[in-house]
Length: 214
Figure 1 (cartoon, rainbow, N blue to C red):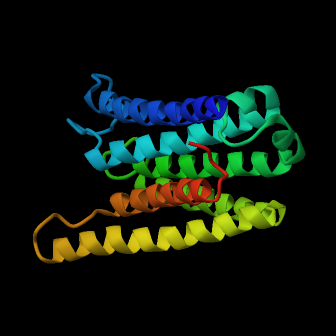
Figure 2 (figure 1 turned 135 degrees about the vertical axis):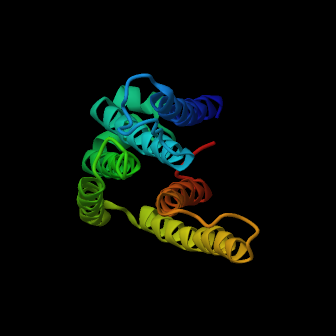
């Protein structure tokens, strides 16, 4: 049990470190004397910085899953709730999930880096974002038949949790904005919320079903 908890904290610690690193990297890019953010005196918005941090979490998760799948011994240490046999037997599934996470993370990062006075033109960013997101969804659909019944139940539960959280967060924020109590959410904020909620719901459902050990 102690070993299991150690594995869990290793994985979540790396994810948390990625979020912190992504946030401060975005801040550093915004303040850098090198004109990374195109435009006179232009800096990334706080929303873009948060989006990049979330994107970093997705990419890190994908990379960790890929490393763990290709090297089951390492995977048994850095990943949570799986052992070497699981990684070998379900190699295709885990590599699929790794690719999906990386594609979604890259899509959000591109979106955060695009727009007026940003490193990537708005039209290019939108096109690449849509392409990566569609590719991620298509790959996700390819991986669905690889899930066992237990994983399918966890996936359905994650969808239900996502739906409830999105109602609470987005509708709650919209209601407060309509009442002029807070500022209305921006488009990048809405996309980031969806990415965050999907990730939280996946971990929540996985933990409830015993697929993730704390």
